[in-house]
Length: 162
Length: 160
Image 1 (spheres, rainbow over the protein chains, first blue to last red):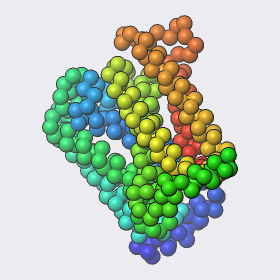
Image 2: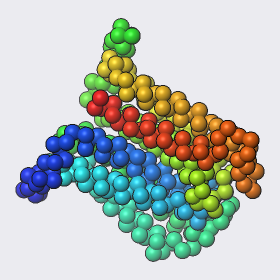
Image 3: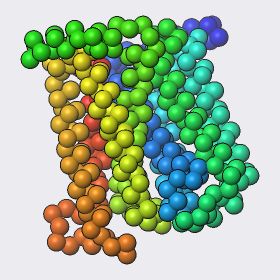
Image 4: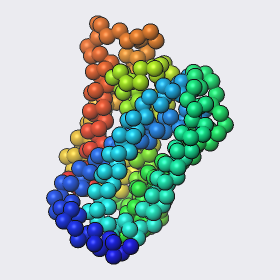
């Protein structure tokens, strides 16, 4: 792992990322805008799945999901930039691995939703209750995204690698 | 201003926030500030995007509970923001980008209130944009620009 990190840090792409000092802050700004889209819009859908804001039809809440996906892609790109730029800050950092674990959990949970309860949840209209399984999916999703945020913010404080 | 900043930094809460090795001090306050940001700006973005014509099946009146999330997010960030300021008052009070951030937030809150009024006035059947200084869609654009600007200014406080 350390060998991989050392190789990555020696690439010209990695050196470019740290050479231009405006790249890092710019990526941070984009990362925080993406964070807001993911937490705000996916969180809104999760809360509806959990049974909050029942006046919102589930399908209508889902219509905004492309913005959450756009936010996720922004953060994937900027997150990759951080990792390539300073791999040693992340590779042995416990908080980073916890963040990756939460990301995988969020992804697996979303896939579970799509392949199982999704179809009978999406037709739930205004004022109607969601199936119990959908409530669990919503809670797991919200918790895992907040976990991603928590461990992301804790990167400089838990691992001591910064 | 400098005397006040120095005094603030030396208050017990300022010293604790800045110097405590506890994970519950600075790191947790910073994390809560990010959670509050997600709630406040995220809830705003949902309403703004709806006013811009996205997700037309989403009934505007059904989004009213989002204002509670905005207020909760704002309250979290006002409290954590004061703590973060007090911890490093001498640095932050001299940063122009900090005042820019505050100005952007103040303007964004005015626009948020205007949007809420405009939405409350409208019948669920549709948005009547006549006889108004700014249409709700235009307010939504201004809201998104101001909140994005506030996020950018906040991030840049670590650099400028």
